[in-house]
Length: 373
Image (tube, rainbow, N blue to C red):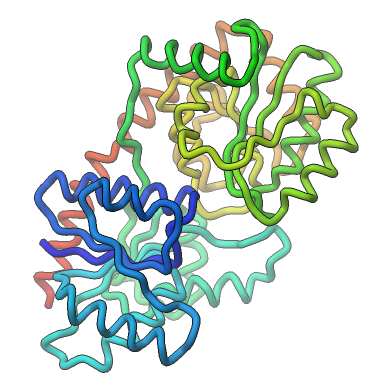
């Protein structure tokens, strides 16, 4: 099958990393995958995975329609899978310029909701709706996304609940130990130093400032602990000021982008998801669980897909930094409990979010969509 993925970009990020993984998995099963975006640092990863990358024009209205029309006409995909609102609306416009027999069916995935905790619901719902434009099937990857769709004029017959994000690397226990040792050495840390991490683009919806504030509280009782934020983006200067204000600049570190983030996570004793907006559990949560690192998260409906409180992870009240710090301290002190949660998290993500299972479900959906014509 010839598959065309459409997204905004291929910069470092959870959605983009997952597109690379999907590409690799589908290609390994004999499919031809082309990814159309405006480019980014992960283009090489797509090509290394056996896929093709085509640059698309997402800026000018007329130019983008022409770009998407040419892409569809030249690639002749059996099915198109859109991962963003902007890609969906441009794809829909481009398809209308093609003869009906040359219009491939479209599947859309809504990969998140709010871009920041303060975003107005009307804007969020508009983005969700635009992602569905032109799509015969719409994949619902989290309960909050389904709830948003229920408020919109989108037929329930078009919706299908299934995961799109998956993990394709479940390291061995020995592999985790080796990576843990090597990463700690790279970071200049002793093997026994408590380490807490979070990963995500530095943007408002990730709420990294809450992680920094919790880290400062934990440091009061555990002064040897180190805290790492992995990711780059627009809020770096703001977060640097947050770190400076805590007076813990020697313990709280902004590492910037790390292409090997999934490996770096394995050096952590605790992984934190500080986001408070709904949308999806987050690929880095799954990566931490795949490495048997216990995860602490603010409670949202979406994160419950991967975390059963007290068993496969730990949930705290949304935005409650003090409670977050208390749980981090508890897991750093009680290594037996932390290890048990890590093992249970690994089992859960292997059962529900393996890339093999995700790819099988997508293949079935693509085949059904193409069959409908």
